[in-house]
Image 1 (tube, one colour):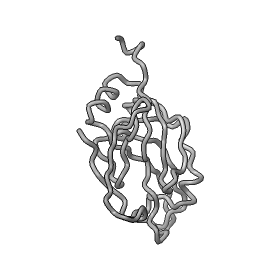
Image 2 (cartoon, one colour):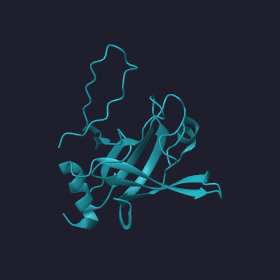
Image 3 (spheres, one colour):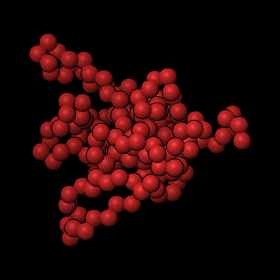
Image 4 (tube, helix red, strand yellow):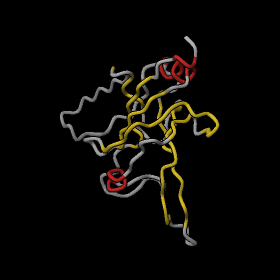
Length: 157
């Protein structure tokens, strides 16, 4: 099958974990619950490892998940990237965030430039969890409470 006729790989996953319960940020690039709710990644480029010369697909939609995370749906169009995702080599998701800083170092503007597939995202729990409508990530939590610690695991490779 040639690159021109390769069927895109539909992926879904977590681009940003739920914000901390205390409402702060772990990093100045991190998003608050309100920022996640207002983020629209539709139409953004899907890159491989934040390389703007290596566009591998397009983000189709983003939304706030039930747990407060930023979830995405995207198509991976590049044949080699499709194979890397299928083999488990590139199952991480990483949000490319630009910031304009004020003179005092505070963030005056925070914007999302792109989304990347990667080996492992810097933020915990940012994995592709669905490929072509099928689950590809399993997390088992053994707490009696659903409000227990959030799992941050590596996908099966």
